[in-house]
Length: 369
Ligand SMILES: Cc1cc2nc3c(=O)[nH]c(=O)nc-3n(C[C@H](O)[C@H](O)[C@H](O)COP(=O)(O)O)c2cc1C
Image (cartoon, rainbow, N blue to C red):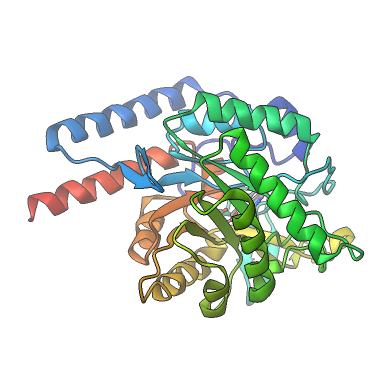
């Protein structure tokens, strides 16, 4: 791993401490490196006449590189990711009620793989857990913060991620009503799209994290939301890993939908003495970062395969993007845009490094035309 910066999120502190304190301040060295990268992009755009600009659901943004739902739970965090050059800014998933989420541990650096299991690690490995449980401040707070984002970062594509709070007693009607009310709120707050989180791996079975595995139920959620937000409003659907998305796409697609693939993947994690962690919340935690890179590539490629017969949905690829090469690989597999969560927290230069690589590739392509 070639990451030399301190993570933006303090993994030794709780989610709420990170929420209150906000991201750490960038060092002078980091700020000057960001300026150098921006200058390099600007100069290359001017000299080549090429650009990384893309139009997503009618809105033109500087690049197809975004921060995923998760790293940014309030305005200060989103403002930082805007400053770091992310063109798609996704709010962390919010519920319609205050929710404390899980205690520590939350984010742990881990090493390992799905075949052999994961072990927590003291240093940066490129893979982390994101066991937070979708904590949510008072809805009045997140609404005000989201409105502020929508009003101040108009040159970015702002996505509001939402989810339903599901328990054993919750009826399907209630789930559909929560999703559709929250989606409408996102629209009314000024978000460019709403993202339906159907795939959080950090809540217990039966709490809605596995909705994406039920294509028909997912379809009913999207239909209910569509009815409420109208036919034109972009709806992002956050899915987990499926080997084959055929039925899921059949039940959920329309041409104002983007599939965001994919969420983290649940696994058992042990400490270095072999003791299982996260036992107070079902024994598993979502694994993000390099450990899921290959699964994410397969997810994007499979979603791209289903885009036949006039289907015109978008694909946002994410999972394991820690550097430009990973982003290019997901775009080659069929993603229209890419996002990062782990990489965005570990590497403050990621968005601009990816943008520069995409631009260089375009310029090379243009000179060979
Ligand atoms: C700290 C953290 C918090 C996250 N919270 C959310 C969330 O609230 N909603 C969501 O849909 N995904 C959440 N995710 C998952 C990411 O959006 C992403 O799908 C996953 O981490 C894979 O991307 P990555 O490999 O770039 O991390 C979170 C990830 C991290 C690292």
